[in-house]
Image (cartoon, rainbow, N blue to C red; front, side, top):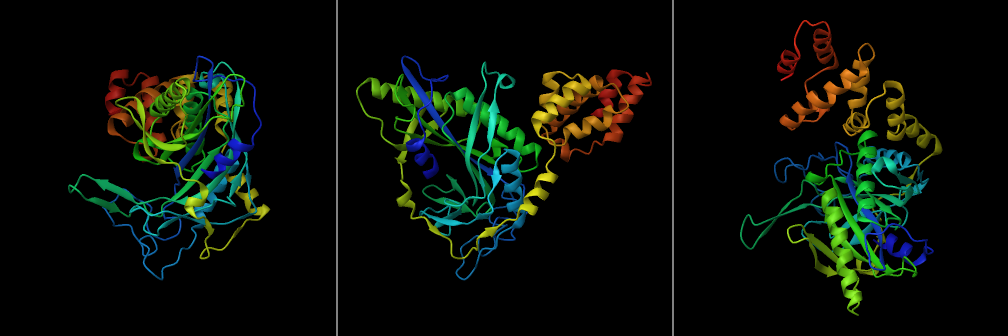
Amino acid sequence: MRQLEKLLRRLPARGFGYSTASGGWRSTVGLELHVQLLAKQKLFSAASAKWNDGPNTNVYMVDASIPGSLPRLNPHCVQLAARAILGLKGQVQPVSSFDRKHYFYLDQPLGYQITQQFFPIGKGGFIELGQAEGLGYSKKVHIHQLQLEQDTAKSIHDVYPGHVLADLNRAGVGLIEIVTRPDIETAEEAAQFVRKMQVLLRHIGVSNCNMEDGSMRCDVNVSVYRDGNDRLSGTRCELKNLNSLKVIRSAIDAEVSRQVGLLTAGKEVEQETRGFDARSGTTFLTRSKEAAPDYRYMPDPDIPEVHISRNWVEEVQRTLPELPEMTRERLKKQYNLTKEDIETMINEPGCVSFFEQLATTRDPKRVASWVTSEVFGQLSYRAQRLADSPLTVAQLGELLDSLANNAITSAQAKQLLI
């Protein structure tokens, strides 16, 4: 949060952009994405990172803050964070360190969160939005920093009236927090940025980014300003824990409308943290906004600095797959596939490789049609990912060959797939 606060004060004014607001008002938006890493163990303990197992079954002493227990950094989480910042065309920092962010709540057994406030593992990078995302213009949304941090426990309400239960399975699961610069100017830009981030992080194996189960959570900072004024001059409010692209769009529009209404009526916008009620389509106050001193940040004395060599970074870079933009161009040029088929396959981890193994000796358009329609239809019905499906390349290839040789009908092939 402090990073965006500093940027909002220091960045120069920009020219007019495309705005959610109207009637002489424009909006400025910055995002903070909290993304769970695809690591088998937690960030600072050897406990399983499967947070949706039975309550309090994947908890080590350090996760529960047992006195005398000490954190030990999981190197795989460091590697995944490095993959993420490199995939964003940013820079892995040669030295990073961890800090304690103090606050008291039952979902944080330590009484503080371990994060990287001052010396994060990654800085810089960007995501470019344009016509492929349905925008009539192009723009870059720049990354301010990417930091490692631990997730909180899960609070469970309404099981016992008047009581809140805590499941510590999620406490200590590794996250990356991705903080953008306040480059975004509309709700649609924000939603498309998050969607494109999901595609990238899935594609390079950093996270599954499923917003519906909390693997990616989004906080949005929103302010408004008058035409002709500094676009960073408005008072910023933060919207917490937005969990779908639709909610992100609706919440930003609702908050812009609320702030414009206050200012038009001659009132002030107070800096605060707010939630979003999807049923009423309005935002609501949760608490006044904390400033950095409220969290009493301090270096964590139990965790040494992380020193990363250039050779290590180059090795991580070599392991990155082809990035989505290049894959899109290649699939269109090599196979002449439709935009819809390309996007569907890129959005599913492992699907491009699955398709290309099948398409080497078969009609690529027919293969793409079967994969994106029939196979994905069955996966959706079974609530499965392609990687978890028992269907193999050889099995689907044999089915498609039988269909091409008229050994079976299309109806029979679909029945066999089921």
